[in-house]
Image (cartoon, rainbow, N blue to C red; front, side):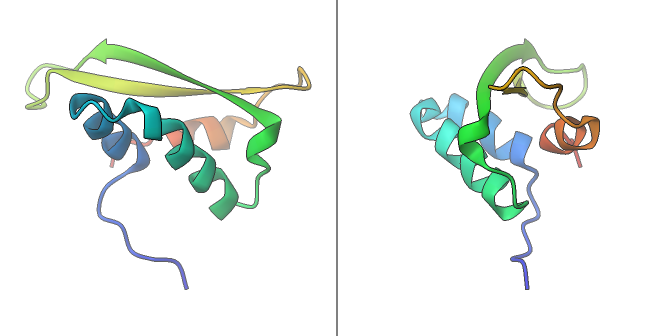
Amino acid sequence: MPRFNPFTLQMEITRMFEQGQSFFATLKVQDWLKERNEDPAAYDIVFHQRPAPPGSGQVMVVEIELRRKDGQPVDSWLQEEVNRHA
């Protein structure tokens, strides 16, 4: 049974960047991919820091981009899920 986590992956990654722990962000995304039966070695993981939307209470948001190393497109549901807000 999967653990219940009230925070989305994007929220956790954004918090890591805010706390100066961005080094561990890649490992967190790799673990997230493993939990979804994806091979983390098949993906390049790129982080984009963007200003947070007004009224969100945050200064910045980190968006996660997945790129397949074999050149194939990333499944749209996987890309959407990695950046799910809530």
